[in-house]
Length: 369
Length: 43
Image (cartoon, rainbow over all chains, first blue to last red; front, top):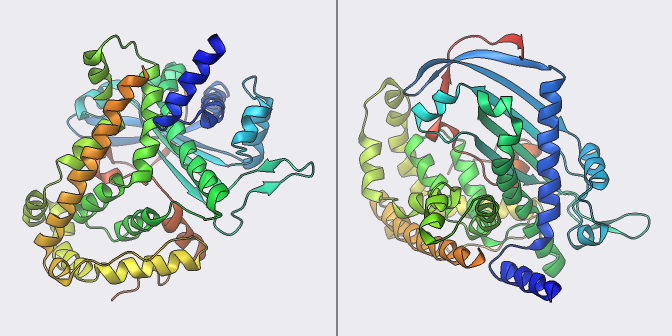
């Protein structure tokens, strides 16, 4: 009976996009990152000290550190963990994956005054296309090791005093990144295709154009990345990890917790995107920083929008050349690319629709609890 | 059209094409640097 209930629960989770295959690895990776932070602290390793100016807070002392967990080290830790279950691992055989961790420690008040969550963790996932395959060990066991993970942790001094307080955030962020590896793995197993599909192009395009520094256009590119469905899918396990750590008795409790998650933040950014506001912001020159960046961006943005279809085609071409499997993307009409206002209005509608989609995904999570 | 891939190394191109969740750090940046770094020990 109990076994049946457990199976039913797993199936409901999977129907909502929370695959059980990533649970074990997520949990072990979170242990790994946490234990390395403990080690760093207990071995009294060197921290860089620097004075920084925090928004609404003033001068603060920032301490920073970083460490790299090699591919071998990550696998050693995984296979020797008490949580490691070989049968479970074979369903998603994430093998030797390097992890880079950097962290900043600031006074707790610096977070509350500046309005930033404490801790805040930025993470990213990338993969190599050259050696992308499901490999085999000498005993024929399948393995998958194309992923590289990076974490940047902004923590308060109290987090550093008690590293355990970082656990819920580390856990949720890792589940998001491990889920990306799982998406690549399942896609490759099912279709032998490499990458996240059509939307991989928009992710690459966003990365590429962000390298040309233009504050307002970069905000638009960031929302474009937030609108991608493979990102929405990864927000589900990430949010579920947060929900599982909270006491939720009713829908009100659920909404209080959900409003602190990245998923909620993404919905707000998508739904509140306004073409008019963006155009208005581009014209606003209020600070020295604005003079340096906003002046040049006016012509630059017009040019990028005019060239939009060509840039998309170039990304598709480079992606395929680099070993990714992506299809050409239908271009926007010249009416849209000739007029920045029409261009941003087009995307505004698109982002609002994607925001609604993500909100529907979020409300279904209540059924999981 | 300016070729944005021109002058990039193979590794840089791979990173642009495959990296997800690149943060928009300056968008909600917590701090700005003020002084030269100096080494210190923790605790």
